[in-house]
Image (tube, rainbow, N blue to C red; front, side, top):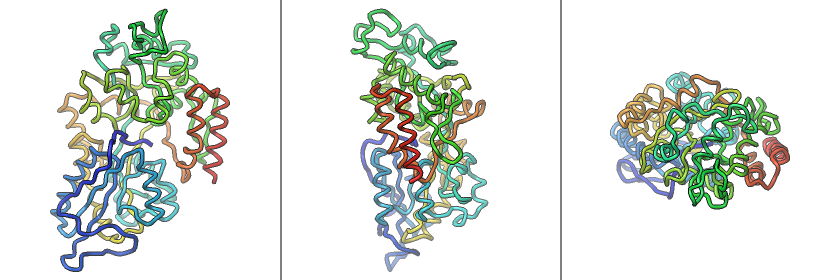
Length: 448
């Protein structure tokens, strides 16, 4: 789940001296037979984080001159497919980023290093508790926490807001209600910010939904940024404690119906034909000045700051009947239990789990470090850039959260339910019928 999704290509970065050896399956450490050099490979999907790791591993190499770390950046769109293939074939990197929804099967299959055993059970005291909890299974921690996402908030385009006669105060406390009833303010604001080619807004007569040039809001089939927060904010659930899915929960169904209506009934968000198969579509449209309100997380902060050609800001997540309920997530670096050089791999894991090793991804503003002692570097960076990141943290400080998806077979379950949700978001399958089908398919895959 989520996850920085803005990668465009595969690239390889080499840190320190030239790599002398590759990764192969086996046990124990290998070297070149002469100088005793070992190369540890590290895989991520985040180019910004990779640049930060480049600096971190250069410092690590100075302290450990016999170990070189080579970074592989694999695009988000291919990341988990290639990882699954490489793990199954015994060709996985020594260390790789993994998210909460994907690690379970690797942990239960004996593919990951038990961090508690490798670094000591006390090591986790230095890391964000929420991330530790997400990656603990069978009373063991299966990765070294690297990033913590905070919560979800809303990026906004200041010019588009001003053009519509709105100010930040008009969007700072947005609310939504099932069926767009009661005190719903999200829909009216989104309609005012949506325009067709003639400049007619979605709240005016004559609006042409077939020729939209600007959308007010970024509703889409996006688990982390959109539908989990809507479900939580309506008091719904996504899974039970046993990891079975609860799509037919009445409040969950209401949340999905509201999102689908924003797209297909009110036309204030891009069509699902564009967004279902492209997780970057709404982000790209926001950066192009074609979406006024872009709901997302910290994982897109560096991307927005580096690529937006307009003035922008951040406001809190819209509140539903149950409040503004966000999901919060994290990323760990998992160690390959079948690495050919386990000792060197464990040394790298220990380094990136320290303040010294983890602070680099905060110092560049790329990600919020999951090592708590290193987090101030992130806050200092964005304060220096004049960016207020408090909405991402206030939402999880002042409100309950909805749990991130979990389960050893979650990837299989996601693959089973997504094609059905695609049809729901396209408007080709009624919400209630589609959610019932999606739930059945997901639970069957989860049990499999």
